[in-house]
Amino acid sequence: MNNQERLLSRRYAKAFFNVYEAQIEFDDFYALERAEKFFVERKEINFFMKISSLSSKVKQDALVSISQQIGLKLIFLKLLFVLIEKKRSSFFPEIFKQLRLELKRRKSITEWMVTSSILLNESQKDTIETFLKKTVGIHTVCTYKQNQALIAGVRIQSDTLLWEDSLQQRLQRITRFLVQ
Image (tube, rainbow, N blue to C red; front, side, top):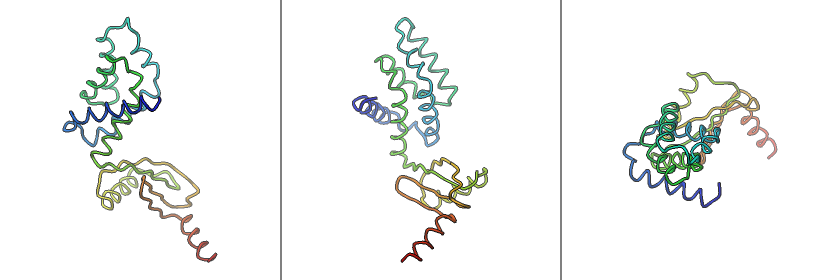
């Protein structure tokens, strides 16, 4: 996707939010993420939406089915129907990305990458998310990954903040202290 299409997708997302912001909630963040992933992974849907011999009704029914499958609110279908009408179905993945970014901006959502030396269970994830909510005080969305190089610890990072407590970090501090 070129810059002009990305800019147009951003404009669609902002215009959509200007009209429907009151109906969009924090939990829609996850649905938008699933929708973006769905359309990125299934490029054949773009081809399907461009077939001129298919009626708009068939295309709309397919999108309704997809939205139910991924848990997307029906209000987002209004935007997809407009995009089909304007022959811009190739914008679907970028539109969902821009909608997610706009939701993140307007609802003060912070995304966090939580890296740990072991796979975390649900209780540990809940503890981390509670810690973030108390510490930062805004909506948080966490993505988890494992990195054994941390050596018994956790690293939590957003676009602007970093918190780490691991043996690797402690060893680095000791090394810096000894080198001075």
